[in-house]
Length: 221
Image (cartoon, rainbow, N blue to C red):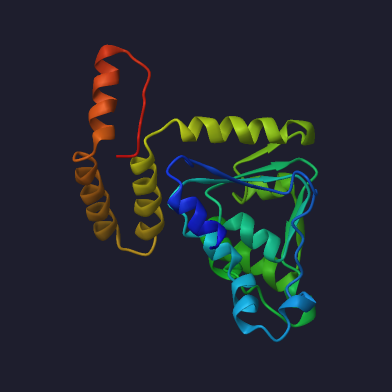
């Protein structure tokens, strides 16, 4: 069973943090294939679709980047919903220098996040940018001191995780799917998802807690 399947089957998991805090690097060169994968097409394909497994999660995902996110490491970061980095971190795609291109969603997710112009510049030049530039162009949500990264990421995850799980999943669906729709179609999707929430126990709990001024206890039902 893959990690994504484990997360989806565990209703207690409300938020996932993707981090390199223990290693200090998410640098994964595109043409590096472990010997154990050679000759195993299935495992090779799975390795090249790591970002997709993160992007497909219904629960919110927070990337906490301590060191450098290069190549496929940056693709993993781009697949997360929120990105927080230490001020010493760096980001880039080096594939073009080896005659390659990003292959785990990098060309698509980077352009959607920072705009076509900056994305194509970064990928065509193989430019590596620092955390402040990444924040400026919208690649990151926050930049914090290295020693504060874990605490900030955990606080963010706890804040997000306290919200209604079904509503959070619908927010992700509305935003990500809506980006590939016309405005009219996106608004219709949003309205449909909003109406679906009226059938959940979490909505009833939210209204009750608000009226009675009690702590929220969402169950994801």
